[in-house]
Amino acid sequence: MSLLTDLLNLDLSDCTGKIIAEYIWVGGTGMDVRSKARTLPGPVDDPSKLPNWNFDGSSTGQATGDDSEVILRPQAIFRDPFRKGNNILVKSTTSFRHLKKNLVICDCYSPTGEPIPSNKRYNAERIFSHPDVKAEEPWYGIEQEYTLLQKDTNWPIGWPLGGYPGPQGPYYCAAGADKSYGRDIVDAHYKACLYAGISIGGINAEVMPGQWEFQVGPSVGISAGDQLWAARYILERITEIAGVVVSFDPKPIPGEWNGAGAHVNFSTKSMRSEGGYELIKKAIKKLEARHMEHIAAYGEGNERRLTGRHETADINTFTWGVANRGASVRVGRDTEKEGKGYFEDRRPSSNMDPYVVTSMIAETTVLCNSNLSNGSK
Image (cartoon, rainbow, N blue to C red; front, side, top):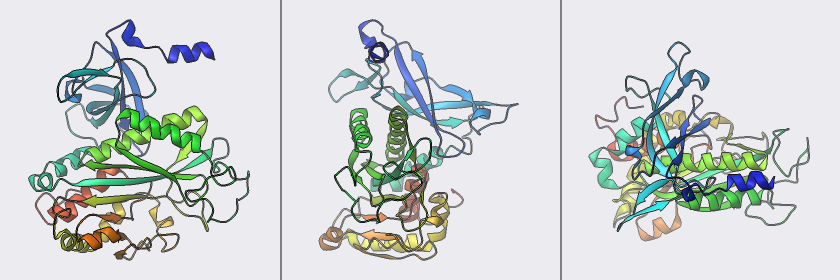
């Protein structure tokens, strides 16, 4: 395996000006991240300068066999932690510099230029480009929970085969071989995201053993979705190497075990300013008015998780509170004390689409009943 390792670690910049770009997109299920690589002639300083590409949409559930071509449009680029070499040229504040940067987040279009139904980024960008939303500089911090499973059994790592560990309690943020499972995978993902240029804020072991969380943010507008999808892709690649399966199921184990969410922390420029707490409370009232619309867009299988137990609110009832992790929306003690800050929407499930959820929160709280909101979901 040493020769294979040496080949994988080749630095192409020593012998060629060509680059490898990994085009990444979301497949037809809305959670199946896909990618393929291509060779390009040289460094690029902006995703808009990367060429469009295409793929067989009939093999991803995004087109029919008689009209199978789907177009990929590059939208964001990140450093590739898996390949070596100078790949995509990035412009700094003072000069151009070569960086190992060739993960390319794309969205999908028909050959005639229309966004296909699974392209959730298109509408999100439309909302984030609205002048009222741009003026508010929406910040997001997304807490992505996930579960690591044994590949051949789809049972959480560290759990007895076909059996259960001790009850929840000792595992959250724990250390020790009998309490913490998969830390090497989690740390590898953490470092890979930092290398990629993703604004990953931290990691922690979750309440259910074998379950972990990473946080992305603060990110502004559409970049929150781009960064979370890039982080998910990197996690899929690392678990592939490790021979385990990552699950984003919101309730991977039924019964007395915590589910997996993707809590979204949100603020606007006005909320972060003096008097912002009153605006936060108004925004929460707007969220309450559209509660079931948000629930419908917050992930598949979320009804198995939002039961009113295990640090969740009941799916049919909207509640909010300060420091209340059993509420639909939580406000932090610091926000209450300082009279400004952010709130946490705890309803989104671990398999939510960040483009849908982040833009919908901005739409509801900033645009409310504007013309853009009508029929946009």
